[in-house]
Length: 140
Image (cartoon, rainbow, N blue to C red):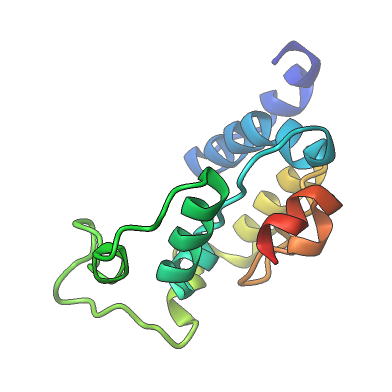
């Protein structure tokens, strides 16, 4: 973290720390995807198309997707509040924004830009096209 010490010293909130930690952990994988063979799994894709994404992962691993996978993929997480129905219209993916002011969101995006993470930029969905050709081929 030494190379980022000055920038990290300006971080003041838990959300900023979490985003910075995520960036430090994932930035290398995202920026050098063409030199590594990883299966990228984005929450947004898993949320919208769970059976397809899980089948894609099984295919990459060279195993047959278990028949019960499709049904299991539709079971809500134990963290889902039963009084808060899951919105499948796309609103669920941006619901987290409600907990942040515009200024706080701008700061989180600034952290992504600092670490040169371009796959996320504040839109509801990641930009798959900003990954390397190798990782994009996993999505097709």
